[in-house]
Length: 356
Image (cartoon, rainbow, N blue to C red; front, side, top):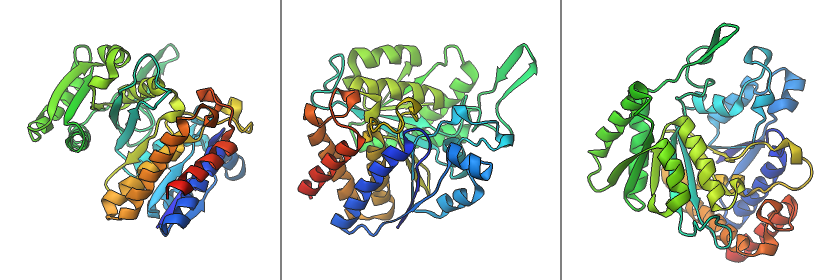
């Protein structure tokens, strides 16, 4: 089993190194049979090769069993014609990673504003929507017909809506059997209407799963008021991105949000947060998000390849992180603790070793 590791920009190399250290420990302790290939991408790669994402790296990802992607500073990249390819968006399109799965739950001593019982998963469509780097076959979905007018096109398809809805309902069936579809069909009637129509069609195939709908603005308020009432939240690209950040912050920090980008044949672990260049190189970054994402990748492989030891490895990571994060003295600075990236990773390695 071969994993491709793409460290990325900003704090990406630091938290990727931490994640790789955890995966290597699991590999030894549980005999997972993993091999790792690391490839440079992003701004450093742009200086050397004239592109943030060489074609050879894409092919390495295409042939890999799993991908671990560190944060990228794509907002600082030049245009695509100048080599500035958003690696995250490109991999989602090229490998058809249509499902972005973002779990979010409360942890002891960390939940904010009374959200002590939150345990939900946001299922976000990953290849369409308003994001301009992934909604066109050629070019991007934004353009300026004059210097004073900017337009953005949103793409929603029947097929894309149907398949992401199936993922959400199948996940809910294995959890607490409830799906909440989040939309803005009262204003964006055509594209949101198409999305909701397909979700409702899928809902009919899952009579054992409770189905409800919420407007995105009321959903943002309800998460703050009572996040525990939700199980699986299903929505489109941009809404899912925003709501998952809100939910993670309610759980304690954006640095706690795991994120897996999955398709039929490929899965990529990716931290939910950005590259935080302001703290890059200072040993201050919290690697939890990317480590949890890597655990999700292991769990996806366990389900799709039938490898029980991978499921065990994923569970050990989650339980060890829970135990570690309960202790204020073992937390990173964003959680009010004293540890840097390396010290936190070392403490987690020790916790995992005890658990195994």
